[in-house]
Length: 113
Image (cartoon, rainbow, N blue to C red):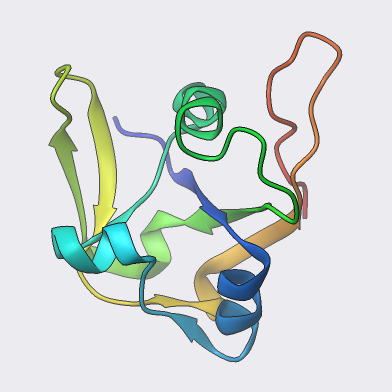
């Protein structure tokens, strides 16, 4: 069974947009036609690859059940399944959010409710 919680990495401006009610996507999300999410196991790799060196980055924990059938699990170019939202990400589906921090081993700290 796919993970019930996934994570969206957001810039400070994107987090401010989400906190207004909903997030409609980063430029890459809009270009691809869906909002990219990562599982807990994929999160550190996503941050390292796409957000390295950026400041003011946030991590939002998303309750996938709250999004219903707008969530589709699809393979990446490397074959791993990633959750994608075909629609907007409402603030009501976010169960926790926090500025990006790392554990001592370098992994991204998951936000807790």
